[in-house]
Image 1: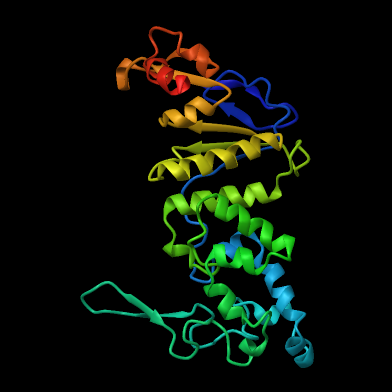
Image 2: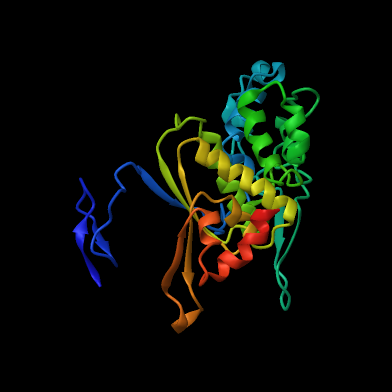
Length: 291
């Protein structure tokens, strides 16, 4: 049924229920799903998370860049000033195959470096901007240890188990799970413990542990708990019992699936759900909590 209630201070109509209560402290709602973080090859983890700007500023401060009067824009592969024009700063060229899928090969002009030879003469600690983009995130974390604004998001990416990706990894090559974790890192980079982040956010995640190794699930949980410690709220639709055991509050819907479900079977802390006889989730969760 359509709603009769409206959000306080807003003209937005609430559909599907009569009213929503207790939402006043929430400043925004963000669905962290597995949709791609970028559709063009020029998009990468460094540009999405935001620390690419700091890397460009760093290279603009090198002696070679100052000698030529180059600004940070020279080290962007989104502008024609310093990028390789043969590949448009993508580092790859697409070859159309008549009866097979198109293939991508490294650009013959720049060798995949994305920039002109002249731009690559600017070096920081012996590495060019092209070298940095080819570094793994784990290597880059150590390389930029002296620069907190770059080192911090790189460390968060490593905590999420993404240290094997390269700094300039093309966004279309990322899996849905990798994209979802990069989105979480972007949010975590903004959050500060004690609720001093920009706004109180309600994060909604749908099955974030799909395809993750057990070790990566633990890393994911640590990141989600950091978001909560920063004063935010995280709602997860999940079947992973390790995640349910870490929750502050569990809502168990059922008791069966499809037409046999849709009821609120149990709700409360995980230990309270285990005490509900009708809750299949509670029965499965009990030994996990015991461990």
